[in-house]
Structure formats: C-alpha cells, structure tokens
Length: 148
Length: 305
Image 1 (tube, chains in turn red, brown):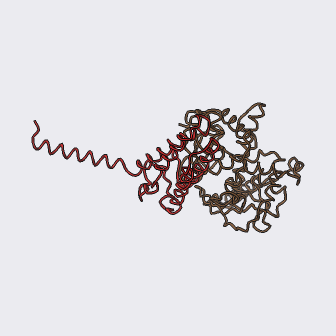
Image 2 (spheres, chains in turn green, cyan; image 1 turned 45 degrees about the vertical axis):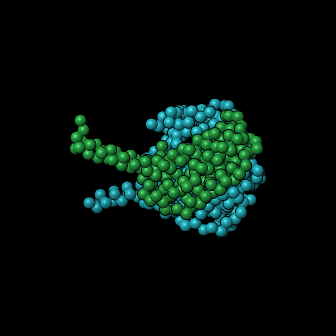
Image 3 (spheres, chains in turn blue, green; image 1 turned 120 degrees about the horizontal axis):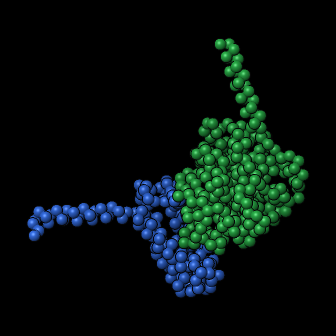
C-alpha cells in the first residue's frame, strides 16, 4: 500500500530522474545526433557515387534534402562551455564564431544548390557530392579535433 | 685546486669542440651534384610539388585554389617546442628563394641545411625528403621557379630553450636523419612507387608515426604509421597500418576513394591537417593513389591500443 509519504518519495525520485536525463541530453548529444543524420544521408549518396549501390535520382535527391534538414541550425548547438567533455569540437569554434558560422553557411549554400534539382545522372551526383564534401572538409579542418 | 680547475676547463672545451664538430651542417657532395641539372621538367615538377605537400605549410594558412601556389609562408605552426613561422620559399629575390642555386635547394631538401650553412629544424620534413630522387629535385626546382613571387616577410621562429640553439639540431640529425627506406617492399614496381610516395615525398610518417624521446626525437620506425599525438595542438593522428586500430577494414579502393574525395568508408570526412593533404593527393594520377593504397596494405599491422 502506498502511503502519502511513499508517494512523495516516489515523485521526488521521478523528478530527480527526469532532471538527470535532461542533463545527459545536452548540446553535445544534440549536435552529434544531427551530424549522425547528415552522415547517414552522405552514406546513401556516397555509396552511389562510389559505385557501391545503384544510382537512383529520386533517392539521391531525398538524401540530399534530408541532409539539408538535418544540418539546419547546426551552428546554434555550440553554446559557450560546451567544448569540454566527450566532444571533438575544436576550441576555435568558441573563439572564432564568425569563422565557424561562415563555414556552416557555405555548407548550407552548397546544399541549397544541390537540392535545387535532382541529379540527372551519376556524374552529376558525383559533382554534387564533391561540392558538399569540400565543405565537410573545410569545416573539419579548422573546427574538429580528432580524439581517437 | 688549480689543477682541478684546469682539468675542468679542458674537459669543457673538449666537449664544446666535439659538439661543434659533430653538429657541422652537411651539404651535397659530388655524388649528388653530379645529378643536379637546371633542366627539370615543369610538368613532372608540379606532380612532385603536390605529392610532397609543399603548399600545406608554405602557402598561407587556409589558402584555396591558386593561392596554394603562393609560397610566401605566412603560416604559423604551434607545437610543443614553440611556434615555427614557415619561411617564404616563393621565387622572390629578396624575401624568398629567388637567389638560391639548385645545389642550395638540394642541400635544404636532402640535408636540412640552409644556404648560410645553418640547420633547418625538422619541422621541415627533410628527414623524409632525404630519400628523394635527384632528378625529382631538378623537376621540383623547375616548377617552383615558375610560381608567383611573394613579398611576405615572416617573423623568426619563437622556440623554447634548448630548442632555440640551432646547432642542437645537428645532434638530432646525427641520430635521426636517415635516408634509408623504412620497410622492405621487394621489387614490385607498384609497391616501390607507393613506398616512395608515402615514405619520401608524401612524408606521411612525419605525423602518422610516433616519435621517440617523448615526441622530440625521430620517427619510431618500429611503430611505423601507427599514429600518435598531433604535432600541432590537441588531438591524435590516426593509425593507418592494416592493424585493428588502423585501417585494416579498408579495401585498396577505399583508400583511393578517400584520397580522391576525403570520404572514409563510413562516409565521415577528413579533418584537421589531413584536409589539405587529401586535397594535394587528389591532384595525383590515379595510378599513384593506387600505389599508395597498395603500399599501405603491405606495411606491418601495428596495434597501438
């Protein structure tokens, strides 16, 4: 039988658990989830470009569109102080916001361009991936630190 | 007492003299100069230029496109030893290497010695370039002379004691400057080409191999290409041997595709200093990338974990 006291203890425990859960899902997890979603889409078009899967114009456009949706507002997930812990975010993100934001803007602009129309053929898809991939590298060059 | 003082003084002077003699900078002898000719092929030279990654340090930081051909330096490398300000090696007569002779160029690449007879620091990867074919030096020289002159003046290196003693580098060279190949690849021409691109021109080992003496020594050839701490700033340089912690799961095609596009088999992208290396590699003929892949598959697997 639950007494009132037990119920109160249980409630406190539940609230405590909820707070603990919220503390775990912070900006680091959020941005990693976004990056994972971007990576998933890159994998779909990348396999086509590499010749590991068949070219499919509709599927490619869908993946690029998903990538754009996943990448939107990525730069907002780096609040001050979120550069510590299990993250590969480079310190430069927090000291050079303008540079970091510009790289993200370049990335989004390339996604706008490649999602304007479905790639006509494999060659077009490879060119699109090159355009987008260049921006992956440009940002990872300055703003990601490999830790493992 | 007086005698003890004399003995001490003599010992100190002998030590100093030995240090002086042992650390004299080497330059090219006749076995090298006999090959040096001012008739290099510019097209071949350009391929050597990209394979050797000159622009990754000697062009301005974040240079893109044609800016990579402007070798004015303007690039600081922050390392645990201090900050290296990369020199201007554009053909400018005043601020670059426009007044150098081909022999002086060879001395720099093969022996890390400047025209003034001083040691360069091994941040300049001459311990890899030491294995360069002499004809390739001719070709590279021909190409570099075609590049735009830059008036950039770079500040001197800002290094901590004792690294700021230039002669000390002579001791380092005595211990670690070795033009011999690292692994034995037999007489397969593809593997030999891959070896030359990885061990010599590409100087991959300079970052991908851990160093002795807590990072200040030479490359630990027993741990060839197994990764290590990043020479600049934070982070780690990955193991690229076929081992567990390396790229054993990558096919040769995966390695070629990565060098062409920057995408790993999981479609993660290259990051850090590898971005500019990959951009250089993407300019090489596919046969060279295939040779690199074949070589990387043939090195001993080393598990760094």
